[in-house]
Length: 470
Image 1 (cartoon, rainbow, N blue to C red):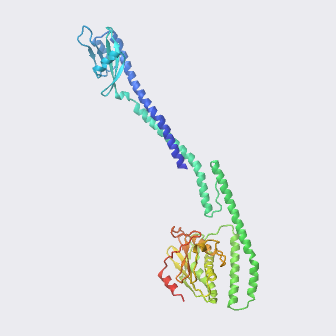
Image 2 (image 1 turned 90 degrees about the vertical axis):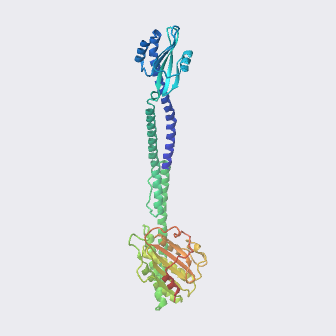
Image 3 (image 1 turned 135 degrees about the vertical axis):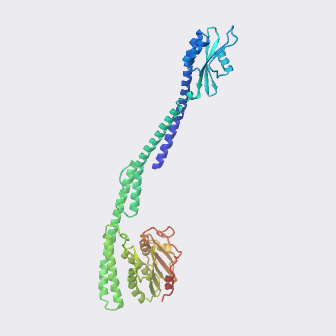
C-alpha cells in the first residue's frame, strides 16, 4: 500500500508539472523573442528622426554609431531623382527583394537570415522616398535567458515531485505501519504467543480491525483456559474409578499378571496426574525449552519397550529393538516422546492379532533422528484417514488421536510423520525428528491429514536387523 501511494503521487505530480511547465517554457521563449525584437525596434526608431532631416552619409553614420552597433544596423536609402544610385550604410544581410517589399508595403517586417533574423523598418524621408532601417538580431539574443529559465522550471518541477513523493511516503507509513503491526500480531498469535496484542492506532478502519483482533485474541485465550479446565476436570473424574481399580489390583495376589496389572494401574495414575498438572498450567508447553533441552530417545525407547514387552510375551508376539544401545539426544520432552511411543505401540496391540510381531528401530543421523515402529499386521488400508485427527473408524474403537499426537511431536521440531509398508509385511510409521530446529523441506513436510506412502530409504544395518527378526 505504501509503494502504491508513492507511485500514484509520483504519477499525478509529474502530470501536473508537465502540464504547467511545458506551456510556461514556451511562453518564456516567446517572451525572450519579443524582447529581442522590441530592442531592435527601439534602435530603428532612434535613427528615424535623423533620416527625416538629412540623408548625408557622414551624419547618418554618426547617428547609426550612436544608436547601436554599426555591425548590427544598416540603412538603405533609395536613389533620388538627381542621384544615379541609392545609399547603403552598414552591412546588408536582408535580400534586395525583402527590402523592396518593405518599401512597397510601408510597414515593418522580419526575415530570417544566416545566424539569426533582421528587422526591416521603413522610414519616410523629406523627399517622399522610403528608406529602410535594417537591424540584425542574432539567434543568441533571441534565446538569451531561455535555457536558464527552463533549468529553473525543471528544478522547481523536480522539487515538487520529490516533495510530493516524500509526503505520500509519510502518509503511506502512517497507514501501512498499523497494518504491518496487525499482520505481525496475527503471526505471533498463530505461533502460539497468546499475549500478542495490536495497538489501536492509524486510520479508523485499521483501529477497528485492531480492536476486533484484540477481542478475538482475548476470546482465544479464554477458550483455551476453558479447554484446560475441562481437560483437568475430566481427568480428575478418573481418579475415583482408578482408586477402585488400584484397590482391586492390590487384592489379586502374587504372580506376573497381577504385577503387570498393578504396574499398569500405577502408570495410568501417573498419566492422569500429568494431564491434570499440564491442563492447570496457564503457560503453553513447548517440545523443548532451548539449546540442550530434550531427552535421551534411546533410554525412552528401552523403558517403553520394557513396559510393553511383558504384554507382548503374554500374547506370544515377537519383538525387537534396534539402535537403542547408545544415547540419542532429541529436542523433545521425555513425556511427549513416551506418549508418542505408547500411542504407536498401543495401536499395534489394539489393531493386530495376537502373535503379530513388531519392532522399534532408532536411527541417529547428522541432522535428524528417525524412529521406526513396524509390525507384521494387515496394514492400514487408508493412511490419510488414519492421520486425520478425530476421524478414526468407530468399528475398531479408534479415535484417530494417537497418530495426531505423534505428528504434532515431529512437526514441533520441523520434522514429519509418514506411514508406509514395513519389511515385516504390515505397517511402518516413521517419525522424523529434526535436530537443528529448521523447517523440513516442502517435499518432506507433512500436514494435517496428509500421508507420504513412499518409503524412506533406511541404513542397510537397520534393514538387515529388521529382516532377522527372531
